[in-house]
Length: 149
Image (cartoon, rainbow, N blue to C red; front, side, top):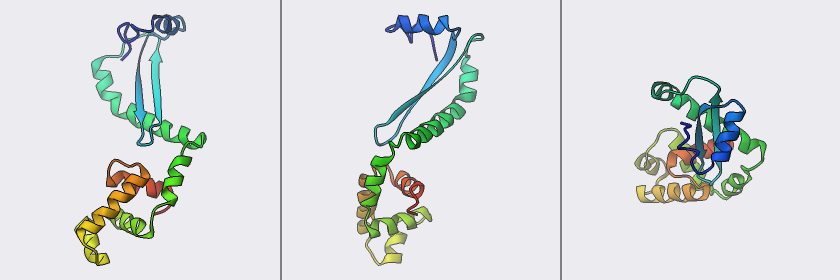
């Protein structure tokens, strides 16, 4: 949430913001596994942002920030790095991500495909690295958003 303390190192920015009539607000940042960062600032002229208001609206603001971040990446064609990685997914990695998207765990996928659980986990880990995902759920989402699943 904005305060003079937040702008301590940039007092000119704080004065310029106030001169535009924006005295109260908060800024929310978001970053993705590929290192792209966005920030959404919400501001108003009157009525300070209370802790209750912040708590009540924080989840919606974070959701909006993520939606805008994704839209801007698509608009600016910065998602191109993702496409490069996705193209390199092997058929086996895609097959395992598809089963993961269906809710199957590694041991289930292993039984379905005749692989050991360790091999399934290897392919999941490999796909995660190629996609720059922090976990298998993120890998599935990235592949699905790219139309691969």
